[in-house]
Image 1 (spheres, rainbow, N blue to C red):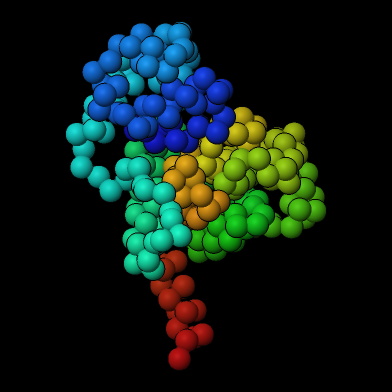
Image 2: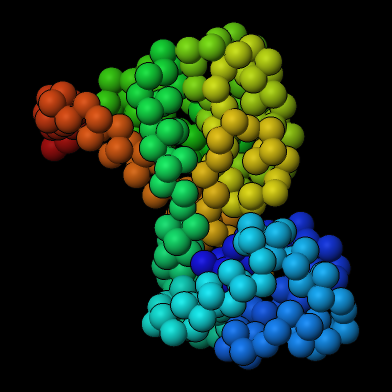
Length: 279
């Protein structure tokens, strides 16, 4: 989990913290056996910087970091650090790396999940009068998918992917509504601004993003963070987008379980409609 958390906040770290973080990511087995001072000395910095890094990645201290690293070092998983992409890679190499990146994103995302928070989020969605979903660019696809998934269950859900429309919609939300902002970077101005308007109107706000220290994360009432492997797989939002879709699907199934008695009826209606539009 520590490795996932470090990757997740890496871009927001100070230069000193990045130096320490890079060392930890490259030498997790060695760090497990180090003291805070030894780690600091290896990076020509102070022990206090090590403690600040631990706090920055959401850990209580260096002992927590070592315990988490120890667990990851001894765990056999495909979610580890991927080799960098190279012009010499064959199509097979690239396919394996892309698929491994997706698998790693899902594995590390589930490791980072706060399930108490998810239970609270699901309850708010369940009780919402309306659910508004905002996303632009690559996130617009996830927003439209969320609209479709929630609507299937009978929720009044609406997706807005146009910058003007989402801001107008946000200003017309109320205290019984939930607004979801989807942004890989968490810095998409249109989505952040729209959620701010929604919050001012009294709506409850939720972020789905890849960076826990982003502007969107800070502005929202609650957040769901996915793991992003941009350090080793430098194509924005590709592997992370898979995790975004899975979060939407998992939320949808959680809501379905909360209205379990009605779920089979919704599925039957959906299948009937699908049958009519297929040969």
